[in-house]
Length: 367
Image (cartoon, rainbow, N blue to C red; front, side, top):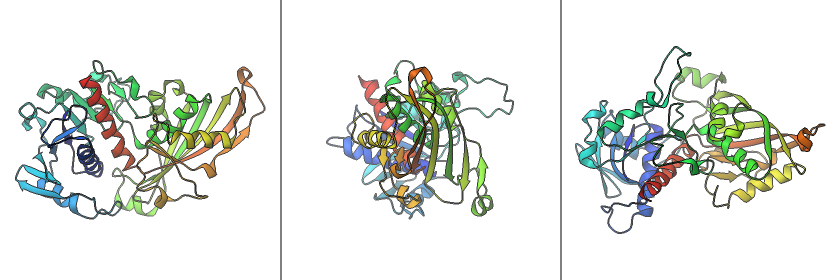
């Protein structure tokens, strides 16, 4: 599907562009001008800050991820190339000025954050999918929008390896890829559920790198308690957990790399042990359903340097898994209190997953 990346100049937008270009180079056979029906064909970028900003940003050494291994070249006022692959460029705040139909653009990877849920101060107002701001793209010929962030008003929230099979091409046109923390939680929980370990109640907290929503001085000098919708959002992608989870976030003065701590009451027909939980996580790394979206770090202790650069949604730290048997047996099952620690690169993992989702949507739409 011919695709435009909107908000291409931000940190997530740049990483999504890189992953899309890499995916194109890996999947397109023959000339890059051929339309790859089973993949994502990057046709255009939109970034109001302009083409010079984007080209310079893409080629400058990033303080976290270093220099991206591509050659980005400006070839005109409205065009650039990625390793020789031509892509159109627009610098529009008003998307009506982008020639979607003329370019045949069918899908938008929305990275700007401006086309999600409408910002309404009155919390009593109940939003519906019709309120999602990304619907503005549809009047210009776009068929699908993938939001790289959480959106309550999306037609469906999808995490690859967790619930991607729920995508229906005829029903779901705005698809949210959820948040980095939601993905970090949902991946290991889905693996447990798929293997006969039920989650009765869960509390989580995440030690999360500073984000753009914080001021510079606020980010540098302190740890800040912050709300997170990740626990509730996990219930959206795994319905059996809906209403069973709560959580909060601690924002810390680091550039990237976060950890989610999961504390939950689990039940199973057979005994739950740390070894059983860890073996399930290790086995999932090579399971086709989860491959590439779950990882394991085998060191005794893990820091952000061990996590930054990891492409998975969730990286489990087996040495920190603990299981405490509980003195009751709900419904005749064995119950335990489980602690599970998951690390995640909150920039890179969040950029790999939406591109995989876009490719999945493109393939399903062509069937």
